[in-house]
Length: 411
Image (cartoon, rainbow, N blue to C red; front, side, top):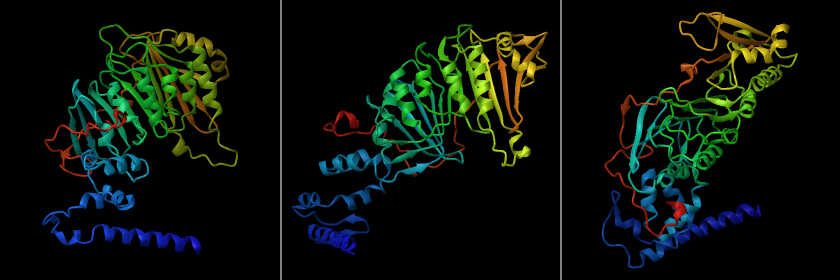
C-alpha cells in the first residue's frame, strides 16, 4: 500500500502546485477567450508548471501547430523534444504522397483508406521541416514518392529522425531519384524495416548505377514483394547491382501473393534462381497433423519475373535446373505470344512452374517479360477533399516558420 499512497500524495501535491501557480487565471477566460491582462508574473509561474498537464495539452494540437508551440517558450521547446517519442501518435492507415515540383517545394498529401483527402501541406523552406510536421503522427499504409525529387536526401533524412513513427506497409519510389544517395536511402529503409512488406522502384527516373544493391535492399528486412522497374529512356537500361543474395532472401516471404519483378539486374544468375526454388520448396511445409484447405491455398502463387537481366535466360535456367525438370518437380509451360522476345521457344513464351504438393503453393518463373502490371501501385488519389481535419491544415500558410535558436537536428 505504501507505493500507491506515495503516488497519490505526489499527484495531490502536483495538483496543489498548479492551483497556486495560476490562482485566478481560469476566471479570466470566457468562452475560450482571454479577458483582461495576464498577471505580471504569469510567464514565471507558467514555467513552473509540471510537464504532465502540458503534455496532455499537446496531444490535442494539430500537427502544424507543434513548431509554433516550440516558439512560445524554451520550456515548450524542451518539452516537445523530450516527449516526441513517448506521446501517443495520431494514426491514419491510408496513404501519404510526397511530390516535389521544384527543388524548393515539397507537397505532402494525406489520403485515408476511403480515398478521401484529409490533409495537404506545402513546404517551401530551404530546409524541409517534415520532422516537425510529423512529430505526433504515426504514418502507416502506403508511402508514395511521386512527382519530381520527392525522395531527395533532404526529404529522406527528415523522415529518419528518431522521434518519428513511420510504419508503412508499402513504400513506392516512382519519381526522380537523381538527388537520392545510397546512404540516405538505406537509412530510410532501416527506419521502415519493422513494418514494410512491399518495396517498389517503379518507373523511377535518373537512378544512379550504384544506388541499389543487395545491402541497400537488405536494409528493408523481410519482404513479400519487390519490384525494380526503372524508367528506361530509349533502349538504354541501367545495370542494377542486385544479385542472388537479395533473391534468396525473398524466398522467406510468407504472403499469399508474393512476387519479385526485376529488370536490368546483371548479378542475378541461373544458379541463384535454382537456389531460390530449392529454398522456396523447403520452407512453410505444413506439419502432418495440419489440415490443408485447397480452396484457400490453391491461389498461393509466387511470381518471379526477370527482364533483361544479363546473366539470365530461359535456356540457361533450364540447363541449371535440368534434374528438377526430369524429376517432375518443375515443368515448362508454353503459352501463346504475339510479341517476339528472348523468352520464346519455338514461337511461344515459356513459363516455368513449380508446385509444392504438400501445401498447394505455386511458383511461376518468367524471363524477358516486363514485370507484371498487376503489381504496380498507382499513385493514391483522393475522390473528395475535406479541409482542416485531423493532421494538417489545407490553408494558405505554405511556410512553417521555426525558431532560429533551435538545434540543427530539430529543423
